[in-house]
Every structure is written in C-alpha cells, then in structure tokens.
Length: 198
Length: 242
Ligand SMILES: [Zn+2]
Image (cartoon, rainbow over all chains, first blue to last red; front, side):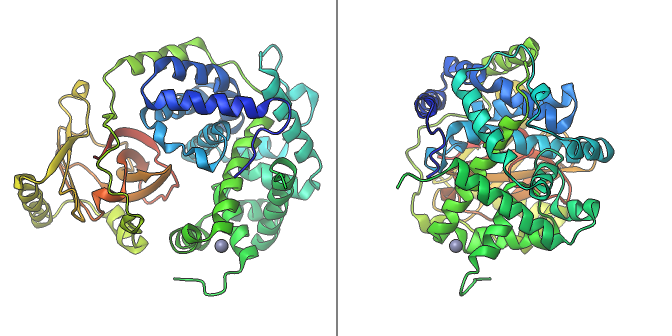
C-alpha cells in the first residue's frame, strides 16, 4: 500500500482525511466542507493548469467534488491516500475536459513550456497547509531529478492531456520510446515518493 | 486472453500509460484485457497500479494551488441541499461472492455503445422482459432519478440473484450532441461500463447483461460517443443497488 504521507505530519493528515471520508459516507456535509477546504485549492490549481481556463477548471472541480459527495464509496482506503484519490479524480476529469474541448494548440504550448520547479510558478497569496506544501516540495524535488526527456513526456501526458501516440508524433520519436521514458519516469517517482518501509 | 508467463516490464509500461490516461487504440484495448484478466489476480500488478494511481494524484501538486471563486462552494452547497441523487441505502444485501464480479466481454459492450434503440422489436422485447421482471414479486425496483428531476423518471429493476438488470425511464432528456449515456457499475472504487443508451422520444428501456449482485451501484453519465474512458464522464444519475 502506498505510504502516501511520509514525514512532516502527512500521515496524520491522511488519517484525518480517512476519518472525514467516513463521515462523508454517512452524508455529513460538514465533513464535505472540510475536505473541500483542504483540497479545493490544489484541485483548482491542477484543473486550471490542465484546462488553461477558469470556467472549465471550475466545472472540473465542481464535478469532482459533487461526484465525491454522491458516491463517496468510490474511494477505497485500501488503495492509498484519500488526497491522491481525489486529485487523480480531478486530473482524470480535467484531461477528459481538454480532450473534449480539443484545444490542441494551446495545450502544446503550455505542455512544452512547463517549468514546474520555477519559483514564479507558486501562486502568490494562496494559503496552504504546511504539510501539503511540504509534500508539494517533495514531489517537485523528485520530478526535478528526472532527465529532461523523461520529464517532457510525463508532463505532456499529465498536464497536456496528450496520449502517448500523440506525444510520439509531436516529438518525432517512436511510440516505444515514449512508453519507455514514461515508465522510467514513473518508476523513479514511485521509488522517491513511495519508498516502502522495510 | 490470458498471459501465461506475464512480462511484467511490458505490463508495467502499459499500466503507466493507463494511469496517465494516455493510451489509445490497440494499447488501450490491451490494457482493458489486462485489467480484466490478469491484474485482479496478481498482487504485484495490483500494487503497481495502486502506486501509479497514487502518483497521478501526487503529480497534481506540481500545479500551483489556486483559490477557487466563492461561487464554486456556494454552488456545491446548493446541490448538497437538494434531495440526494444517490439513494443512500444500507450496505446489507450485497452479494459479496467474489465470483459474482462480472467481467464483461469488451466486444459485447463496444457494439452496444453504438447501438441506438431504433428497431421497434428490440425495444419491445426489452420492454416485455423488463415488464416480466418487475411483475415478479421477488424483483426489486430502485428509483434512479431524483424526485426533483421530474418529469424525468428512471428506474432500475432486477431480480436480486439474477444476471440482468433493466433500466426503464420516461421524460429522459437527450444527451449532448454526439454523446450517449453510459451506464457504469461500480464496486470498491472501480467503475465498469455495463451499457449505453440513447433515449427514444424520452423513453428508455435498456437490458443490462450484468448481475446486480456484482455492483454496489450504478452511475449514468453523458459521454462522447465511441469513447472509452476509465471513469464516468459527466454524471447525470446514480443509485446504489441493494
Ligand atoms: Zn502481474
């Protein structure tokens, strides 16, 4: 099972997320609001990054949280942290949305210009809990160690919403190369972020 | 198709693309087969997939956080205050046998996806089956649409230990242009597409070849025609089965 939180108190937060999720299953609106308070900002940031559009991003976040409210049992605690479940749900919907909108050109530019570790990427004035900021820093560090070609395919898929076939086409490399780079990148991140306790 | 000696590097490569929603064509079909045939029974692959899914949540943090407008929470609050679309029934009557988990042949529902209920005889045979199902005293009928959604009425009828479910409705609005409704079964956080339909003058009679005991509930979503997603798209209705 993914360890998810690691140091910096992340584990405690994963635990309290689980508790809130349990209340959510019982139809508790306060639990919903607390989860919204915790995750609406990273969710909206992600949806905005992927869709590049305020209204589309709002639709994505709205739909994801509403889906959570209506079918909280879609999250299975045995499969990892609630936080990653919710944000991967947001990601999934965001990618669906950009594919729907078919804004290929804008996505190309955004995906290729992506520099997630630059300081100016951090939105000013958005209050965030320290442990989430800490996890963000861990993820950034892990991604920054990837070779540029691996990072590019990962970001084109993740933030650009491209399929691997499309990435191969855009970069002019064989599909097999895209797959190999993607796997290598995710394996490294998996080792860095989900190091199992022995 | 079963893999006799699984090539786990190849599988992991495919699962990586799958977790990123980056597969299409033959790769997507191979991933679907793998997820139906091999992954459920392979501890290694289940763990890999769980971690890959986790990573797609972790990567979200690379995007700078952004303050959503207050109207977003206000809109959600309004919807939470409405009668719940999901009927929250106690989780008691599930048939829990793992063997009951339906793994559907992809060819079957692929064809179903593009099928429009235009032929009167198909419609009528589904309708008469549905009728006989609901006439059976052992049958259960669950309202899928919320009261507030009138005039839309959608019901799911089934025999608890049967192999089929029937979705029946009236006043059902058409999906968006170029879209169809998909019915998804869910269980343990996994969604399986189990049927697709287009209303015919607002009427819906759909036979779903899946055992009700195999799922905790269903979700009906508005989806682009011919597209195979991993999770429901724009959710319109949902209910639990029980
Ligand atoms: Zn395996």
